[in-house]
Length: 339
Image 1 (cartoon, rainbow, N blue to C red):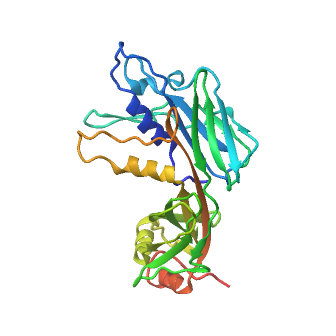
Image 2: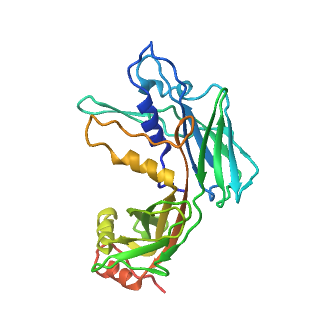
Image 3: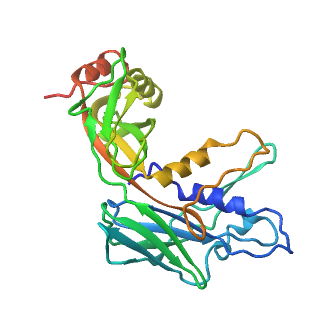
């Protein structure tokens, strides 16, 4: 599943690099700071928890970060999820460890002016992760417990429940004269809602061995609910004109191409309040160089984020007027489907 809301490497870049200076102070006292990142989704078959530590060392911290020993603990941590539903404790979920071997390797780009840009500056391609394969209960609240040798870290999150899209129902219209609306009921424990649209179509041209299924996706916007009680109806407007402009700019001009419109997928990714706060703080920026960069964490005894999210996708067919406009008014190779 495509994850719209959360990037582990971006999170670790912000948190770890804010704790690690590129200059080394040999007289500085060592402090073991645990960094945690985990997003719980009841619809996922696996819950992943990334646990690392801040570090210091001689030399450049960005180079040190590429060494797994700089970020990983030398021993396995005791990690578990403790659920509670209607005041009753659920069976504890014990997390195990696994090494992911397909993480993108570090890339170093040297610009013309000599500046060096390091992409994915942390150790790769292997990443140590904690995980659990037990399904989460969307009506429960979960406490993440991390036992280290001499201390315990905790974080609590409610699980973002399932929700559904109210409008559109059976047909999706892109009008050049007025905006359309997407409406949904905000889920319990969810606050931040990100909305995306994906237009799916079929394509065939000379030289193809078969008809290809393709898509064009774009971000519509974000809506935050006032509470996380799951009682608010939210809506967001989308531009019909923008739909045609996006297709004009994104679709490759292939000679004698034939295309057929398919459905439009409405995707809404909803995150919990702590996730909303984290994203708000880390995307707001600062107004001056003298301002201290704010840091949001809900990890008691450490730094980072343990939160929840849930993503829904609703496919809706294009309306007949929209399909006619796409075929008759735009030279993109779209045709009516043969009966």
